[in-house]
Image 1 (cartoon, one colour):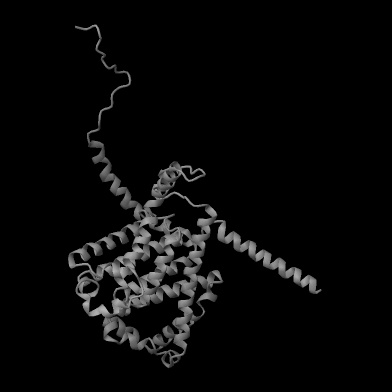
Image 2 (cartoon, one colour; image 1 turned 90 degrees about the vertical axis):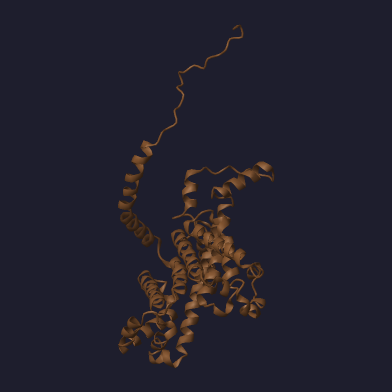
Length: 375
């Protein structure tokens, strides 16, 4: 009987191993979710830089000498790229990072733009650690993981370019022809690495991002249950009444006026964060969990004036949204935009038709040839 139990245990382990190998190497997972993460994370970086544009020198540039002790203790290398830049040079650097964020959102040359965005974001945001928050932390970690993920399969200019070009055949050996083929494929957003390797890299980074989110929610939930205010169901009331986190006083006062609503919201936040990983195991509870965390972060964005923290969290929570839901959402958006697209082409097509077109020589026309006997 013990041998039978051992045999069944090995069979079970072997089955788990095969399923894990297939999940890891067979195909890339959550490609639409990864594309949505790319778009929303890029919007978060662009939003942070845009809203701080007027005070960029004081916070990050030449006027941030008040923050010099913290900058010298920075554990990151990229912030040292901008420590000696003057005001004008930093302005161009700042605008360059904003442009890179736009290109990342559009999915243009993502394999090259992604690492540049990581360096640019860390060099600016992490040069002021005293004003950072948890949104900056998850944004930094998430952007690094996105470098190893395939985020341009959908909703990107890279996907459009890939569909219009043909991948160059890469032969064996290290020679100029093969190197040129690799560079050409990289420039055209084609695959150059073995599929099993790129699939595994993408899926491992995806799993690490999901694990990071689970750790954040569990740690936040366990920290909350230790506090008396969270246990009494009144913790949400106090930050909403703080002047620093009260962009819309009327809305905050209206929400906190009803004690029952405050208590329910407090306990829902705690239980959602504590049991978030367990709720992901079932289709119905997963949808409930994702809806609750998105609603939670939207509330933080509106009621506590932390839009970029909320957008960063919502961006990375998008990996939990099922592909079928994203496909339905894509079809819905396309149906909404179809009248706008049709109107655009209705205006552009007549203009293009009226443009002068270059005349092409007829294939029957003969080119006169000068005889050598002429003259």
